[in-house]
Image 1 (cartoon, rainbow, N blue to C red):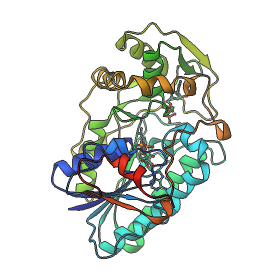
Image 2: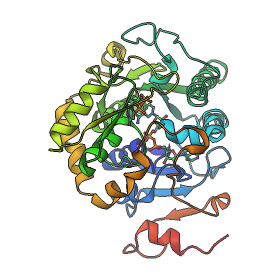
Image 3: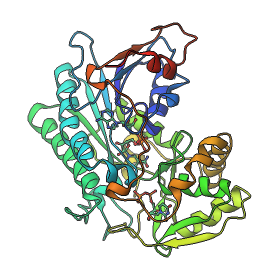
Image 4: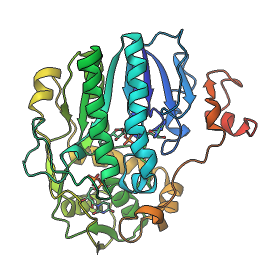
Length: 367
Ligand code: NAD
Ligand code: UDP
C-alpha cells in the first residue's frame, strides 16, 4: 500500500512511518518541520520505499499520477506551548489542511485517518471519557485554537464520509509519550524528564492534583495502524486508561531518573483539564486494540532515551523554567527551514545514501 503520512517528521508520525515501512508499505511523509525534525527520520530516510515531501499540507498538491491507498493526517502542533506560539497555523492545519488531505483521499478512493485528540472533550464533565460524550470546551479560551481545530477536523471528516462516501476514520488520541519527543516540547513527560536529568526543579502547574492517562508510543502506533487497516469511522479513543495525577508523575520521574530534583509550583494554565482518562471499550471491540506497556516500563525507556541526549536535555533547561509559556512568550522550538513554498521533494539518493537527510537539506540552495 502507498500511505501518505502528514506530520511524519514529528514524534508520532515518525514512529508511524517506521511501522508502515517495516510491514512493507510505501510511505510519503509530508511535513513542514514546524515542530518536527529530520533526525526523527534517521531510521527511514534511506529506505527505498520512503519519501519525504517538505511542504505545508494546507497548500500541498500531491502528484495526481501517484496512487494513494491511505492518508494518515497527523500534521498539527500538539504541545500547548507550540499551539500557543502558532495559533493561526494550528487552526489552519486542522481546517484547510484536513480539507486538502480529505480531497486527496477522496480523489483516490483512499482510506483517511485523522489524528484527533482527547482535547475535544475539553475539561470533561463525564469521566472516564467515552466517544459519545460531546465535551466541555471553551471556544474562545487559549486552548481553543487546538481544540476547535480538531473538532472542525472531525466535523469536516464526517461531512466527507456522509456526503461523498469517503472512507474516514477518526481517532481521539490521549496523552502519548516516548522517544523522539523534543526535550523543549513543553509537554509534561518531557519537561519532567529533562528537568530531572538536569537536576533542576520539576515545574508542577497548579497543585498537581489534575490527572492524565499516559500511553506509550509503541502502543499508540499499533492502534493507528489498526485504524488505517479497518473501515471503522469512529471516533475511537486511543490511550492508556491507567490514570494518575501530575504530582505522582513527578515523583515517578524523579525516582526513575535517580535525580535529587525539587518540586516547584506554578499557576495552573487557563482551562487546563482537571482529569482525563479514556474509555477504550470501543477500540477493544472494533480494532482488537489494547495498550500493553505500563507507565514504569514506558517511562524507563523514555528516560533512557533522553539520558542518551545530554546536550539536547541541557539546552532545554532555560526554556523549561517557570510556568507554561503562552502566546508571544512561547519559546520558539521549531527547526528553521526556508524555501518551503517550493514543496521540495527530498527523495532517497538525492546526494548519495551516505549523506544524512539534515545535511542534504542544509546543502540545498537558498530560495
Ligand atoms: P509533533 O509536534 O511532534 O508532530 C506534528 C508534526 O506535524 C510535526 O512534524 C510538524 O512539523 C508537522 N506539521 C505541523 N503543521 C504542519 C503543516 N501545516 N504542514 C505539514 N506538516 C505540519 O506532535 P505529535 O505529538 O507527534 O502529534 C501528532 C498528531 O497527533 C497531531 O495531530 C496531534 O494533534 C495528535 N495528538 C497527539 C497526542 C500526543 O500525546 N502526542 C495527543 C493527542 C493528539
Ligand atoms: N504540566 C505541568 N508541568 C509542566 C508541563 C505540564 O504540571 O511542566 C501539566 C499541565 O498543566 C497539564 C498536564 O501537566 O495539567 C499535562 O500537560 P501537557 O502539556 O503534557 O498535556 P495536555 O495539557 O495537553 O494534556
